Amino acid sequence: MAWFAHLEPAVARIGGAKGWSHDVHDSVTLTLEGVVATHEAGTPDSASRVALLADGCKRNVTRTIELLAELGRLDDDRADPLDQWLERNLACLPAGIQTDVADWMDVLRNGGPRRRPKAEPT
Image (tube, rainbow, N blue to C red; front, side):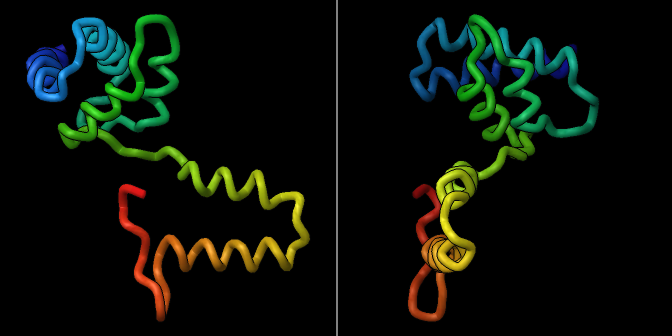
């Protein structure tokens, strides 16, 4: 629980800087209690595990993941939402079109000989 004692001031500091309400502060603290209770010492927390543990009332997955990332304690192992969306929406198309769209999206995302990669936040 020494790790949790380190997190409590970080919640107050980072939450205060980001303008979190008292309710958000409390829900992040409650979520962190669950994360810490099942945490394996010396390893970063995976975002998917935080999401599983934080499922429930008075929990805040988004802000908890944001906090752990800012503290350098997060392994973001979640699948890319755009990849998931493409997979779902291209599944009904013929294989040739799927390949062309996937190649086009790769160029849009990662750049190519005549195009720069998309900006990270987009």
